[in-house]
Length: 272
Ligand SMILES: [Zn+2]
Image (cartoon, rainbow, N blue to C red; front, side, top):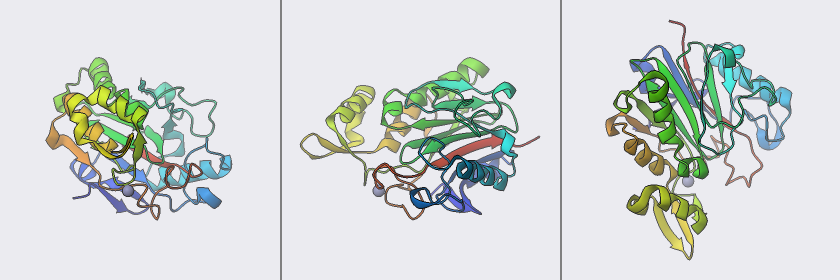
């Protein structure tokens, strides 16, 4: 069953939210915003050429529709790397209105603070969600092929252990909507990086289609890396939604030739 279900204006990790009522976690669609043209309408990326005031209003609508204040919106400048940063009260609200005060050079955010709306941006890349309920620690990561090959999944688990002493067996993870193996053709440069990180298991995520071309299953690649990091299979949710097939619902960088908006993966803990 698809773990991400449409509730009001966003997709939500409905089972997580029903098991843990303190949690809000989901993924925005391209609808219910005010941006125009190729960014229509709920573009949440400030870095893609859209009008900043429209993006800020879109972010405000998304965070408020989830019951949080705009001041709690906290995001990073994503660089397709594997760096993970702990968000404390000091970083709360970073990057919500301008690129200048964002958390720099980071693709993974973790926090144990309530009322911090962790946000990360996507148009085909894989959103990874993390929750350790016994510790009230949440996380979100942006995993494109580069971040995946640099094993940001492993680094998220590693930072949760280093900072809070959380064992991987205590962590739940979810892999959100992204470009699927149906649509994600890659060249041998990308395929070689995936082979480097997965070894023999790469066969299960790379389908050869023609000379030096493969269809890559980036979600399954991340699922394998989460398993290797120690998270149990029964604690991993996997979306079946392809952002490139479903441009009725999502922005797709590949399908829309680079000129498009960004969805937001969000996770936050409500006031106790
Ligand atoms: Zn597809």
